[in-house]
Length: 424
Image (cartoon, rainbow, N blue to C red; front, side, top):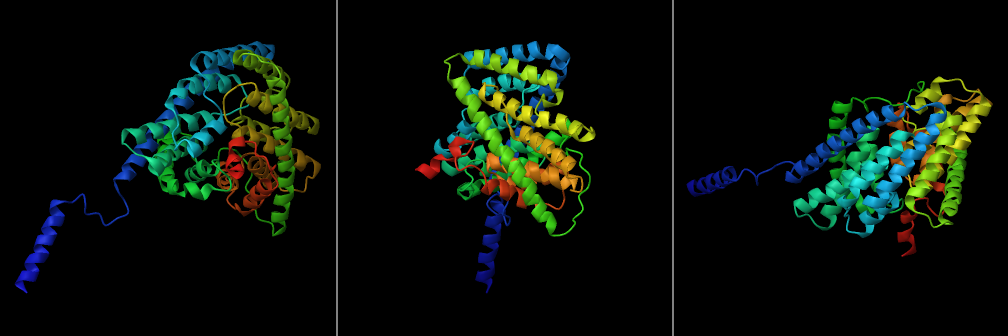
């Protein structure tokens, strides 16, 4: 009996001598690595946003006809940066690297991406900062993983967690940002990257807190919509119908983008010439329709606060789609998610004017969900993002709308690297 007690005492003493090995919780040291990445992602996103805000207010000094030469010059400068420093690529390159390059995102592209995107977004291009942030924070995850000698799925997971931290900082939705970083890789095979979901959630949460403390945005809904009140099961049918209209706009945007891509590819010209031409076109559109300028973060609230006539709304809808397509195909850098939400908002306002008895909030949110899910094929994250950004608490109708856009999307995806695995 005494011998048994002595053995137990020795066992307990060994445990106390090695407290690091004794951990009764799921918590482990890798959590600290994910948290560190989240803090770094929040700091990077905050720095980017502060510089972007400063440049936007500086360039906004040019109004009226001056917006045309201002955007033309910014397009030229962005093109020269890409020409001299290097092409940072687009979202499909990020997807390819995560899926087929062992999850490695090369940080050497960051200077070109940051500088060119700051000029493009701040001057009024119809692309947002989400793609540059995903590139920079994702490559930060790769760098941190290499620093700690991670390999294989652990390195890939840290890169995805970095992407999620950058996306979350802008949208203020840790869960939505984490799911988006998985869904965007491949709409049918997100489960392959499920190992990254916990690292992504941890990094996103820390990034969200850091960004919210520094920038003081992302807390609460971003866009001011009236509160939605559930009016019965027919609301699900309405959500699907409105999403059909949003999906149609998604198809229109995809084919409009393909058209302008063919136009720009027909001529072998330097990137800085393409971006300059794009600047001229975007400047002309912004001169006649100022609400089409910029990526829509603030413009959506402006659109909602004004009572614009139907003809003006239709003009904004059509030329905003053209503006996004030109921005994407002329070499300007940025992301197209928030601009698509702007298109969905405009479409919702048009439908509400044609059918005043419809619920405005349900109409707008369903159109936003339909068009984004159609283009990006991310129904889960779209649902959660819109519920967060609009304050739409009853998110089941959004899910119906998102699934409608997803299942009625073109067979050939807009982000072409999402298709490759199906062809293997």
